[in-house]
Image (cartoon, rainbow, N blue to C red; front, side, top):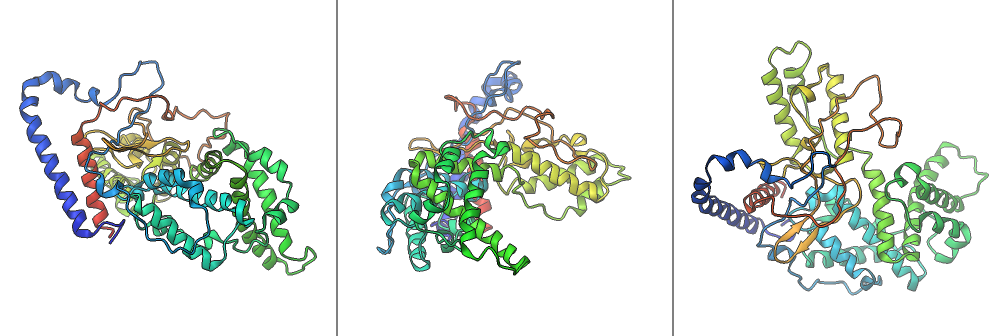
Length: 457
């Protein structure tokens, strides 16, 4: 059992989708035969929205999933322990958003960018808002187990994946104070400069915070003050104390997040927490690179068959495309990481350019006849429309070549304003037309994902 859906039910859904795909192909064949060569010439263009040749590429929503969605989005009555004291009604709307971001079939593909950051933010806000009544910013171990179980039961009842604890590495200890010595609200506010902390983090600039780190520095400073209460400052235990202190600071950072969530309204707290999460996530490539020895063999120094090299690299990248959606900035990190890995294995030629590898090749592919989906680097959520399904913003218009890294220079930082990075896909804005992709593409995408999920059960 995975995501609340049995193996046999998954296979049944897959058969339904494939049957619908077949019927769609059949019903379109007679129409397509009448359109002649004109449609063949225009086929690629009709997949993209019209844009001015001089305008910045605009995003649109390519993943409009077809019905039936009822098995994943119909609410059921959750089985709660009755022992959790957290105020779930304070984050009712936010849990609805979380259940959509972590919807059963897509959760593992959206985990690093959307599902897990939203899940973690919701938990922080839940504890923070509840502290208004309990005066505590953490739960004890026993209560944490009950509350985490209830939290997941509610999400699953709304269509979320049933294995979120595994997907997002979530444990009851994430709801406790860990090794932080402070969890009482009053003690917190007498220990840190709460007014300065709130001034720095009450509202953050989602674009500049990752570079300027105004809020992040304020949180770190507050966490250090909390951690210092754990032991005597005159301790001479040396490195062991330093290591212990580092762990405590990290645990206290969670306490600071919860306090902030108690002082802000849930939507404001979500903006801050998701923004801080994105600063962290956009710095790291989330993909796991399997053994690439066959790539280095085909493309290494002395390469005498370009076609064989490109076929090999494209096959390798196709495996990466089954892992996760990535943001545009993560795609840069992934391109740099893989390129450096190959260079260290004596692949000196720019095979990205040689084989026409673009940034979109490092993300999940929307459909065979389209291309990869790069999610915005700013926080975003999936949207559920009862008539059309789940959709989320990504960009299919930019074809930015993957930059080949240089061993003599560090990868370009998005914070280095003296270096011009090629234009990245625009963040979501405005109402975007959804007519540019056919239901055939959506059926194929969902069938491929459903098929892939069977192998991970």
